[in-house]
Length: 113
Length: 115
Image 1 (cartoon, rainbow over the protein chains, first blue to last red):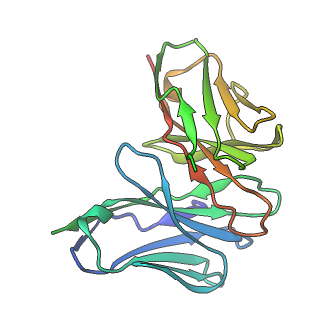
Image 2 (spheres, rainbow over the protein chains, first blue to last red):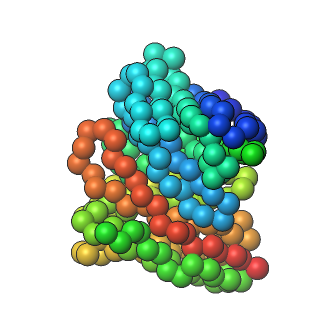
């Protein structure tokens, strides 16, 4: 079992729709969770992080965390073509795991006009 | 505030050579992490430095090494290059110290091609 798994995609949604990206993790002790966006040929860009159970909203983005189910998701409302990118889920195990984020393989999102 | 910078942006080397990559973190950030990104393996953690000390290391062979200077700038070195070392090498800086949510900000990366 991979440490961090994301829905395989690719995911295609129409402009204006809600895109839902999912991620599960295996280390129950994981403490912080991050979503990055990576455009083709570019480096990952941090969108959001979450560490408490529940929802965290930032503009059109909502991160949801359920530690009991070891599940974290990212919702993108009113999707725009500019949101087309690979979305990476990353997990920080905390403790002595200094500076280490464990990444999922990414989900490719395409928003079509 | 300037972001994370990495030099060089592109490198072409041949098998057996060695290479040194450089990373300058965001001003005030003292932790630097290095990652390797390949299409097959995705993003994998190499190591992390804080206050000139390596605090954590991923599962890479000893050919991969690094260091950090007193100004928090970091370098990584790969010796005896292999074809499989072709990848995008990313560094990320963070302001550690929080119990949760130590955000990492990535530089543009160095694209290494080994021929």
